[in-house]
Length: 117
Image (tube, rainbow, N blue to C red; front, side):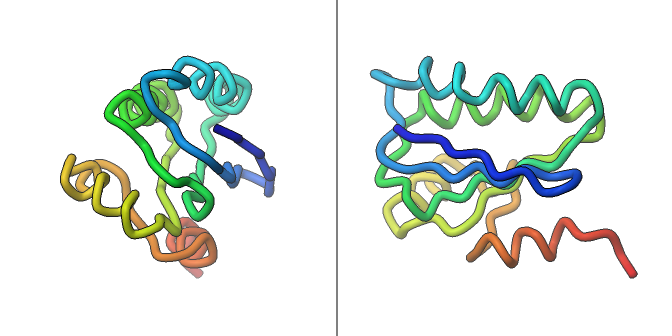
C-alpha cells in the first residue's frame, strides 16, 4: 500500500497504489492520519485517487468510513475517483458508492467539488 498526498488549496488528492487489506489497513489508517488532522482543524475535501489501487478489502473500506466520520463534522468531504474495474466492483457490492461519491477520474471529482460559479 502506498499513499501520496497532493495538496491543492482546500482539497487534497490522495493517490493510492497497491493493495489495502486486513494486513495493512492499520498502516493505511496511520498514513492517512496527517491529512485527517489537517481536515479536522478546518474542513477540507479529500479525493482518493484509486487508479493505482489493485484491491481493497472491507478493512480498507472501514478506514475510509472512519475517515469520513472524522472530517464530516467540520464540513469536510471524501470522494473516490478513478477506480479500476475490480475495485469499483468491490465498492459497488459493498454499497459504498452510496456513501462516497464515485467519479470516473480525478478531474471529474475536482469538478464536482468545485464551488458553483
